[in-house]
Length: 595
Image (cartoon, rainbow, N blue to C red; front, side, top):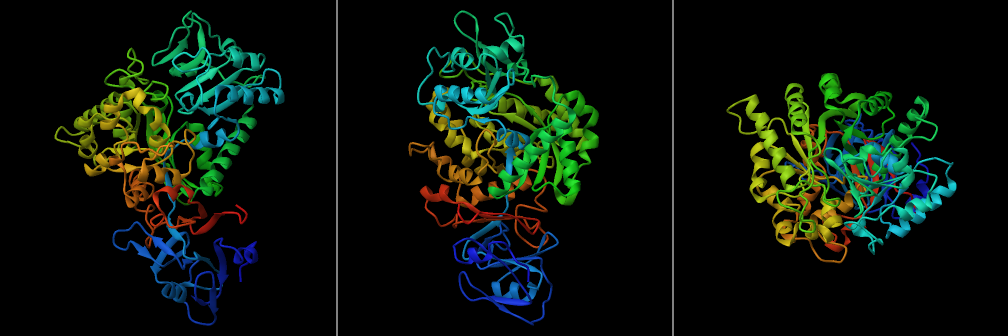
């Protein structure tokens, strides 16, 4: 009989009990497994999950008591008695749910995989309450750093600070205090959105930035009244800051080791939150190559579906070869899309709007990628069959992206009114003009959205857009779903936490931190919310034939929740935790007993 570390302690707690049993077994009540030896087994399974509620997301059989998996795939669903009698053998690992809810493994529909890992290697500024607290964290890092070493962090958001910094320009700080705290170490702090960053004086000097440095296309160096850089770099201007090792570029070996460390940290974060598939919103070819090596070697602990994000010339040259990377390494890696951004983020006033910002009437945001480049990307996607994935947050950005898609579909076939068979995607689709909402379904465009952005950003969205515009166009999940569009879900990690529970709570409640609700008529039902994180996310990547539902033939990727998502009250959804994560029929992570 297979043993599991900690089994005895687990049996004495409410933690999920994992056992291995021979022959057949029957359950005789919550928390107890009675083993019966010697009965014949119809088809021995590697894994059995039983004694709970299994929500399959399959319309033909929405629920089951138990399931069996063999060689990484689900082979049977049924009652506890049926599955245990027909599939339990000496070598079978049996998971007793003890009444818990089992669901398809969460699919992170839009995140940044390498960025997730890297965020755990740098200063984590998410949730830091003030600019003064940010400076204190930098000062502490300086005390531990070598002279000239870069201090790098991410996650700050000026709208979430308890006070506005002294001398702020458009709510953003000026660099003086940061520069004083780190006079000899260059500092680069990326905004939570990833669409702006902040540099100290040393970083700007090392990068050749002065009052005379012009703004690049699609970006801006924010300046004070005298014309001096404040330290804030919007959108494409971030590329002006050249973050580097003080001794020069990292050695190839050091780069390789750092990449692997980021991958390992990202995998661990996924598994701890029940994420079995991660749709990566943009990686370069070297990162994809390393992911492919690890997938083939069997050392990639989650499944990835990756969008290529690099220069258009490189994409045109190499897209065909990377398109062939499909379901390699036991379905661990697929290269499925091409990613470009048409605009920036709302928080940094970089989202491209049809009308000016309510709190900055001289701004409408940025187009961050020339339309000519996007047209070339569309041509590559048409030629290769890769999905074109466009980051669009503002209503102008979304309209231009939809127009781009429609032109491409019509060029492919003059009579075509949609690209339904292509499933091109708009990443975020946060703020829409009402006239454009029906176009998603009509064109067959996936709305790849992140519900948690609504509740995270909601307190200040009305200041950017005005209440009326926010109410008719911000985070329009209900309207999109009712129009027939496919809405997938994710977190945009490391912009937000990867935790899918936060996304489910946001989708169902739209409740802001102060308890109010952000235009609650646009909420999802609980089943719609779960579908957006499973079945719809699989559809958004042409992977609904292997994941997103729990049914025979599908990958045995499963998340077990601490409580039933469908039964807890709205205000308690965010207390749910993932107790167990199963990838390919193997237990990949279990919540520690003391957590």
